[in-house]
Length: 289
Length: 65
Image 1 (spheres, chains in turn brown, red):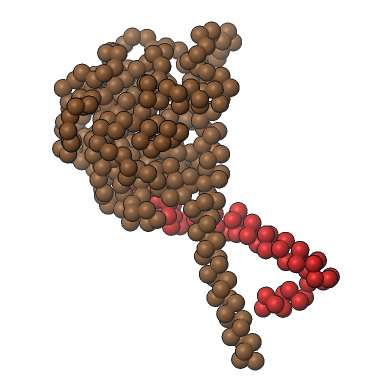
Image 2 (cartoon, rainbow over the protein chains, first blue to last red):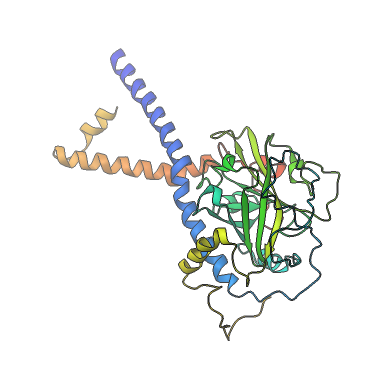
């Protein structure tokens, strides 16, 4: 009788252990299967919507000063308040208001793609508005609705998973100063240069401020990009936060920056059509709402 | 316990092995598709956001919020 009880108890303990391992497998691997499929769908959605975009009318722009592209600069530890001296290596155009992106957000559509050659030549993450499970668990990145948009003075801040649901930001710690992060939006291609990475507590919301780290300051001439994810890996104790500064902007018609041109082309082709290669306008195109 | 379940299955040995594998697969699928997603709402490894909205782990306002 005693042997029977011990035997059953032993089996139950083994069962609990197996359940724990299964749960880990589910978190770390199974969740990625759906998420990656959703991410591909989101990518297709964005690229097919980009085909409907009309060229920007020349406008005032957002008044953002492009940061020093810093190819020759050494380490840049002190990023706060460093607005750069203008310049940049772009086509010299003013950075337009992100009006197309605002419309995409209103319509609940994918608002941008983020590329980082450092994270891989095939690393690309679609961005949705919002940081709830509905956004983060189905696509790559979610934009903090309380923060600004690309090209606006302020901070374009996004969150992404470190270890679950496709773990889009697993390698965020590999980003180094001066690495480029590219954002493709319906308003053009934005090039950001990484300035700093820090580890903070989950409640340290000043990293999301218009001037990252200085919530009391207002920002009228610098455009930041911020990525947040879990840290250390396999925990949610802290957050890894990476800041990058806008150094270049190109219109969609000007085409993708060299470093991501092949990748963008491939994604566009995967969608079946290339929004950049074909010049012919669709006749029955729906006007933007 | 598991030995008892296995002995209770009907049929010859190879049928019982098949049934056992089928039961195992069903249980794993149930865990993966129903039980674990439910457990996940308590945000064990997921919260990658900054500030209260994410930290709460509960239902956050969709999109436009």
